[in-house]
Length: 254
Ligand code: BT5
Image 1 (cartoon, helix red, strand yellow):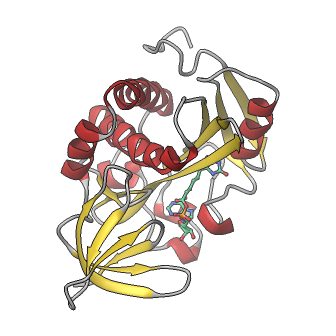
Image 2 (spheres, rainbow, N blue to C red; image 1 turned 180 degrees about the vertical axis):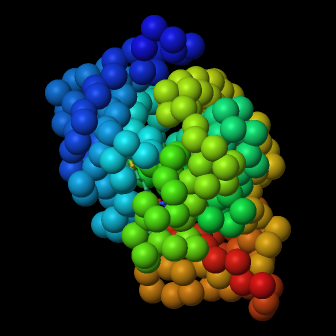
Image 3 (spheres, rainbow, N blue to C red; image 1 turned 90 degrees about the horizontal axis):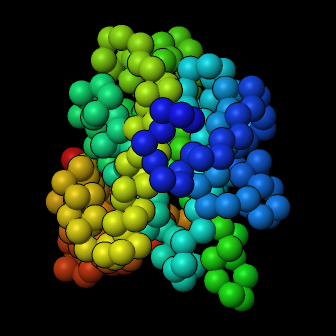
């Protein structure tokens, strides 16, 4: 903590050796009134989660399994933008600490050489007065070897160690992530999404490409033209129509 370069993020860190999910703990702490900037870090998660009740593999001692409580004064519709803001912060941290070149796959994946090294999960506590808390979950594969991942993630998941050839300091990474997360959330709150969108696009592996967007009820293939100020993906299908995609899984289509 003493080594943190932040003003508020991580000033309170709840460290647990093992838990079901740091998201669950962070939700509880937020409900109990813990301040913005409170961070939950676990060595191991037994039921780490992704979007749509998917599982997040969280090997003990190998990754960063972290949830951050924010309390931004924005309307709930803006919550998805925080996933994009957090993605930029994590990419910057990975670059800084490892020199690797990660890319962002809309909306919440960070890839290196096409494989996923980080997933972000933004969850909301809100009521009639607006957002009470945003819980930003970050799962970052740091020091796994290929054999540490379950068979179904072979060829899909990667770690910073696998990509760089040497182990990385999780402490240094946490410090860098919190630093950049504070810088970029401050930027977002003071300036809106405009400048961040440009930075985000610079890291995106999605924009400008032919992609397949799998959604709950349909799958659309087309060019991912842009994201809007609200973080919504604009997909142009071959019939010339522009579709607004709020939530989907994206695959490269060519
Ligand atoms: C995500 O969901 O990518 C969000 C993951 C967020 C995890 C963090 S860890 C700290 C905090 N506490 C939690 O309980 N969660 C957050 P989604 O886009 O739905 O992707 C899930 C999919 O990623 C799975 O269905 C697998 O295909 C793949 N996957 C699972 N574990 C992985 C891993 N360790 N590395 C790479 N890919 C993984």
